[in-house]
Each structure stands twice: as structure tokens, then as C-alpha cells.
Length: 277
Image (cartoon, rainbow, N blue to C red; front, side, top):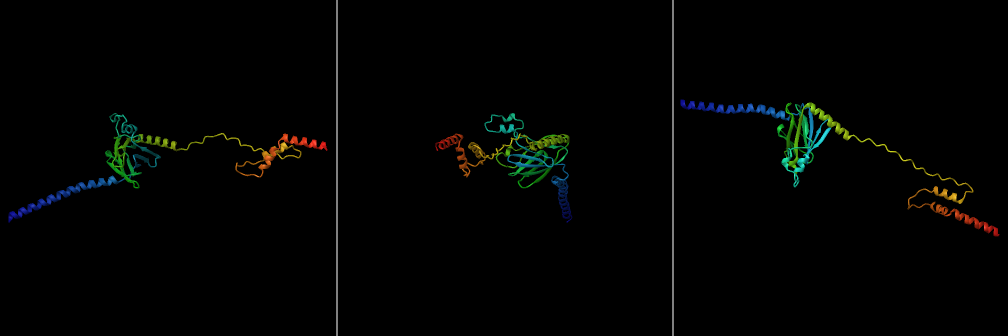
């Protein structure tokens, strides 16, 4: 009986130990893990906010409240080398399919907040060195943040991690981490360039053409010659469209038909008739 009781006591102690020890281990792991998860989702106290929009097939970066926005696509050398029959050896292109024309520029030692969304289909902004992978879904905004150590300036590369169409494999991400002073200088220069490009062009002064003068028809005086009447009537005729009818047109035509030569013939004929009487 004593042996049985002793064995039971030993088994009970062993069961308590192998149950309590894992519980303690899980609690010890859960506390820092939970703290880390909370910190990952904590986007407060950020110093810079950037809106990231994925589209087929590239990225758009907008520095909120800074007046800077630009597109980032696969660089031209990689784009040319990837074409079938281009004759370009991909091994001769630096960072083939991993380089862009306009990298995302951020300062080191700064908590940067990202607002990730999509313009057409679902994309995913992924930079392994930052531990950031956020889906860009049209109509939704996901948040993420990162903070690069102050002594780790340089280039960081990533890729779209969501199958988004034909050129999904040609959507690289490049982050250019600079010192705070270098970033501020770049930001001011970029903002000035975009502000100048967006400013409306000044109107070019042009010489105005002199206004056309309309001849004023003179009122014929008594005793004026028929030719004078013709000139006055013609000048006073308003301009009309070709198909428009005018009651004054026959009069003008009749007056125009009375040329000075015809008037002189009538006068000679009238004088000859009087003499014959």
C-alpha cells in the first residue's frame, strides 16, 4: 500500500510540473508577442504620412500635406531588357526587374505611416527588410508603419506580393532611406518643381488688330449725278447671307445698272428730241 501511495504521489507531482511549466512558458511568450502585435498596429505618433496607391502596373506615392506626389514604375533599362527579342542581355542590367524610375524617399530615424490602397485591382506593398506587407484594396485603406534606424541609410527593395494581372512580376518597390537633412532638401526641391510645373502659364501679350471702319453713306444732295446716287446706294446696302432676300437689292441693282455712259446717252437723246420739235 505504501508503495502504491508513493507512486501516486510521484505521478501527481510529475503531472503538475509538466502542466505548469508549459503554462509558464506560454505566458512568458504571450506577453511580448501581444505587446509586439499591438505596436505593429499602432500608427500614432507618426512624423510622416505617405499614401501608397497600387495600379496596373506600378505605384503612386503621395506625401500628404507636403505637396509632393509621383508615380514609380519599372525602370526603362529593365523594361527594355524584358521584351522578347530585345537583344539586351538581362545580366548586363543592374538590379534587373528590381529597380524603378522614381524610388520612395524617406528619412531615417522617423516613424513613417503608410496608407495603402488600390486603384483597380488588389495589390500588396511588401518590403521584407521593414517587415511590412499590406494589401492595397480598391475602396479600402490599410495602415502600416516603419522606422528605419538612424545609421541604416541606403536602398531597400521589395515587390508587389499579390497576383494583380499580366505584369504583376514587373512592379518592384525601391525605398531610398536618407538622412533627415537630405530628405528635407529633397522634399523642398521636389515640391518646388511640382509647384512650378502646375502653375498656369502667363498669357502672352498680342497686338490687337485695328477695328474695321464702316463707310458712312452720304446723303445725296439735289442735282447730284446718277453716278453719285449709285455710290451712295451701294454703300448703304447691308451685308446679307447669299440665300437671304432683300427688298433693297433690286433697287441697288437697278441703280448700279445706270452707269455714267448710259446717263449721257439718255441726255443726248433728250436734247436731240427737243431740238427736233
